[in-house]
Length: 317
Image (cartoon, rainbow, N blue to C red):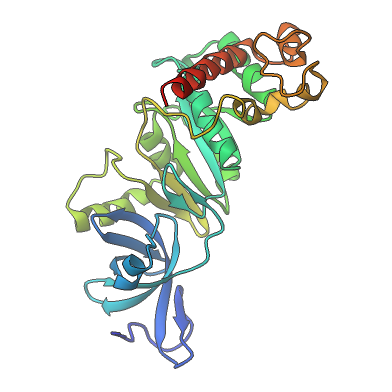
């Protein structure tokens, strides 16, 4: 094991002491590419690290978002080895990230018009992983009040917090900052809706930090190909993930689909039949709630489409 004293005596940000009196650092994995991990140590910067061979032997893969301990091999070049992964409080499968507190899904209200089936697929994924989700619609400056109100009704009745912002005009971003403060948030959404522009507005200084990683891996920073965490300020991180244009449903059955529609829960216990699918059954209280405007018809139609998709998928298994 190679150890190096890379700081002066005293408590420094990110520096810990082993039982033997040696110093090592703790930090957060910001990005991982081709076996290299870029670890942010508060107050010091980004270290390029490899993971020790023991991780491969034990079948453990470091994830973006992991809090880790690292040995510094060369302070001047800021490179080291990840020696251990600290306990994860959460881990997502897609994207494969750790220690996320919440998700912020970004769609444009118009130009491009939102694909609500795609949005619902994402929400199902987050419901399955029990991750609180905030829905954020960009380009509110060119949307009509009617369009915004329709979206608000559709998703606030599900229990989601809905925000309307304009990255171009810097509107609504203070509220976003408040919701992100002190948390690690995964930012997701289709390509072209303004995710990178939002990050740059939230913290212009982070462009220097992402540039630091880009310089090490010799790639540009404008197209997100991998999950990457950006430190907005102490203890506040946002995770940029690749844009998606399609999402497969998670591994669930058609019978389980309704579990991931929060707005169904209030009405489902009063359906006539236990295990009601809310498709063709008589005296279905979920369908009644749709007719009464208590559940978004758009959401319900997406539910029926996804139910049919899961039914067809099972047929060909």
